Image (cartoon, rainbow, N blue to C red; front, side, top):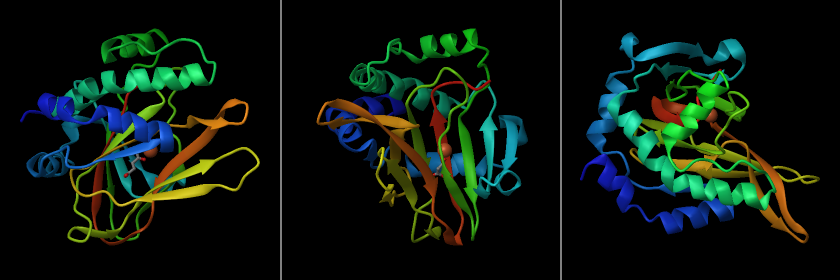
Length: 235
Ligand SMILES: O=C(O)CCC(=O)C(=O)O
Ligand SMILES: [Fe+2]
């Protein structure tokens, strides 16, 4: 099965229901083992990236990440392009529930064009590496005025074999409530889809905007790599 067939074969009804109910979906076994290993092996290949960020220098956590340059590696481009059309209707439904205008276009090219018109021209797909003691502080990935409200993370290492700890953590902050944490333990090749910053939650009088952040708990052994796909471009 190629990547297009794999994405098309996923149960998008179930995924959309999970996104609506919880603000995230964990989709098992999307990236084959070999593809995960190839992406990891290419981490040192400087020609693929536009920028390296050492997380501790910015108090983002402990670890390192690199933003891919355009043109993105084919597998990254394909995942970004093929997943997007399935998420646009979910995002548009969220926007309607929160009374926001400007529906998102049906395909990625149009979204990227829209970003470019707003001086957001830099690719945001990235690969992250955490070693023992590494973590990613709770955050949101907004890169400008234009943003798509959901993003992807692919786990490139196998927990229990390649690393320990390093869970994917989401926190949800409802107005006037303490924040609530959700902890995911994805396997190598799993795809996480989650809200970039907010989601609608039904209240007694319509839908309320609830803020969410994501991060990674401490890696206690080994190394953990992940690949993130954000759909909007950055300024
Ligand atoms: O390493 C992870 O699982 C999280 C990465 C992340 O924060 C992102 O891709 O936006
Ligand atoms: Fe992030």
